[in-house]
Picture (cartoon, rainbow, N blue to C red):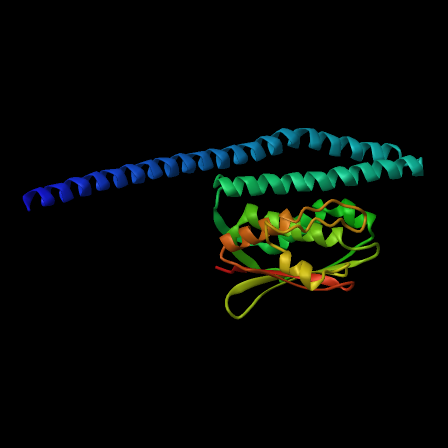
Length: 266
């Protein structure tokens, strides 16, 4: 009957209105949660940036003063050694701070990306010079094999960071009188390949499987107690992949490690 049809349509409309109200409320909740999540991410990025920038200045001062102190105390071997240890510890912490700043900038999308033609030999030698204090202290020998005309096409800042991190890590996990080889070449696929090979303590298969992963802990100390968070390798992977390359690792526990990354030659 007409009444039955009317009642069915009436209750159906009421049900549809109720469903629409529920859906609207759920959409509002989802929108609010998305905004809260976006605010939290922004706060996290801001937090990292503030910490990194505010700590950078004081750390530069500590590095400079501890270096001068070690030089001034050279006549007293015991005090000079303490000053050198202070400088090495500050250098290690500063390296972690730099890694944190680079990662925060990359995550925020505020790091410029400007690929250009790079002379790899110059970048590698520059990084070796930066790490000279640690290599001298551990009496580490370097063997560098790279063609004089070897170039890559990538972002200079990112490649500098990757080379610094990989060389610093190699130094960190080598005992005294060790050796680091840096081999660079261009393969037949028009790709530049750089390998950093150390004679350090190496890694187990389980440790290798957790590298480059933010949700896994890889914070073991170096052979002289140097701090390590594992963040440097995560940054290295992100930077190399941003430039169209890859990064791999081979390692034998107690025998050393080999990190290899590639970059486009053109």
